[in-house]
Length: 553
Image 1 (cartoon, helix red, strand yellow):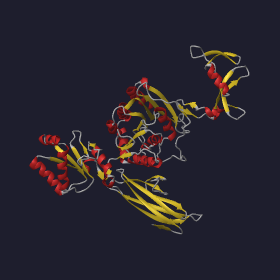
Image 2 (cartoon, rainbow, N blue to C red):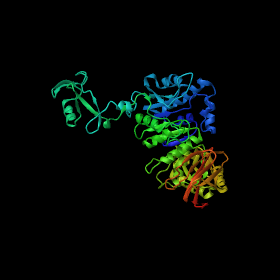
Image 3 (cartoon, one colour):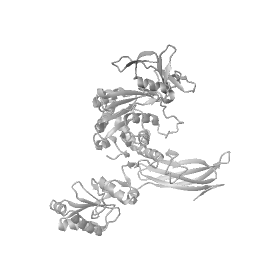
Image 4 (tube, rainbow, N blue to C red):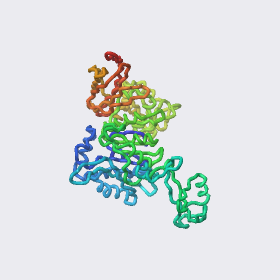
């Protein structure tokens, strides 16, 4: 299973392709059952279609729509895996009873977490609905769980007292309830008691100055605030703030979940190297956090904008040692495929065709892979393949496995496959002649027959001087114009582009392609990306010198 991958498409169909018991943790934040158009956040065709599908038949249809997806999630979870399903009051009771209890079993219910997602709601007819539910279920009783802690609040810190060295501590009971419950009976410094620790441990506490002697002659344990992990997390989470308009992590996605929320979930139910799945990737918080925490991940969404915004978000946080990731779209850009690294393309297209790529690259007769029945595959990252390729391939397949070659002829099966971007007249004619006169089938396969190909959008950028502000700083306007047969989705802008750092968008989502910024005298490199409805993209780099006027290089 390929991980660290963003996939554009219907999550139900994609989930069906993921192998059973291969995922450690699933977090899903499906569209809530609110029957409101504000659920359509990105507004692209994929999201609108999904919205309409969910609302074809009320609550029963919604539960059915979600249930068949959760059934697939249960299948792909490992026995030690867990699922966290984020929902709100509109359907949380239905989801728990009709989906989670039935699929995972009531015995595997772990918690209903209540997350305070807004500060307050003013509702004159009832109490404000300011919290979400997150249902936590495991697949078995042997799930991964790592205790999480939260900071002590100011009220709790009032319980601590100061020592002479200004360290804050709280005293804790050292008495045990019974010998059978793990107690130790002995006298220490004149106090006979049933202690929670053996005498050797008590002596070590004493040497470390961790014993507190009460006015009544008792002995208790000092617990220093700076050594404590915090309060163990309970089921009500009030300490994780929602994304507000001033939040640094805000990307412009209305229902964006905070990094701290997903960090707590991922850290409590997985380990480094585990596989995290988010089938409703949305603003990309789950996969962005999983990537930072050294987990493998898969993100799925039906919205082009969700996938591309998440890709930009991942790109911004990628460092020297970050694991690479890939994006699977409906269509692939011809230029990217045609001119990428030859070996990488061969390996990828053979796998897309259903074969296994040749990793030896020596003594392979020039063949690049094989089908499951070992029939050879050759890949040509070229257009207009000529007859000479057919002749050379014909000789190679005989040398590589003469017995298989003869068997395929006898059974009227292809003796081999050649994959290329296009084939010239000579190649097509020779393949036809071999089949007609010698009963030898060499199948010529266009790349576009394997994966859909489209041309990336075109992009031009106009630069205009507007005026100076009251401090004399020049305001410069940038107008991007993207063109694509599928339509333009959005633009992103990096006003301090550095080729070594890569594209680091300051404005991530711009629907109009128009930005105005203040520029003091100096040299600037501005980059703008355009994304179309197929998820294909193009980039324009603009170099400027700003003095009294703007000069574009």
